[in-house]
Image (cartoon, rainbow, N blue to C red):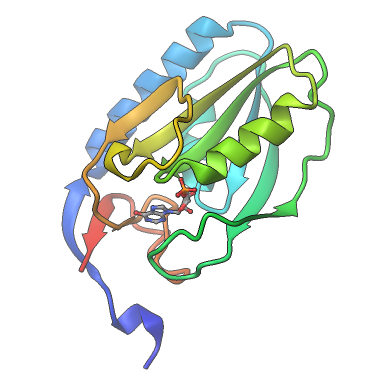
Length: 176
Ligand code: IMP
């Protein structure tokens, strides 16, 4: 039996309209803070839809790059071990950088990313996460832009997967 048969989206937590409105607000806030020079880094795969909507709400110059990381656990648990699967193509030296993440759960992935990116001497380094589950936090990680704070539920859609499924949903749903 494939994994995807075990858990399915059962309840819409955030509608497409709610997400779109909030993403536009976040984009405006980030653009206000960095009106000129802005370099955004999306963390693959989960953040690809969030990034693509976010940047289309940002007028002016914005450059971007992509990283891919993987925690070793493949199901609904995060192991805390992070592997760098794809590194950036360009330097961060002297740039205003915003990391774009799908969700901050334990905070371990983001802590790792912030550490390795800060070591590359950006002018500034901030983080935007669409979702945050504060009750799951294991490390105190700083996130300047948060879309929605949610309860400890496993969610899919809008880029987020369960066993590589459901990333294509336009809304965020709880699986069960
Ligand atoms: P953290 O290191 O525990 O903060 O986990 C961050 C990563 O775990 C995210 O980038 C997601 O890939 C994954 N993750 C955590 N919670 C969820 C969820 O509810 N749905 C889908 N992926 C999740």
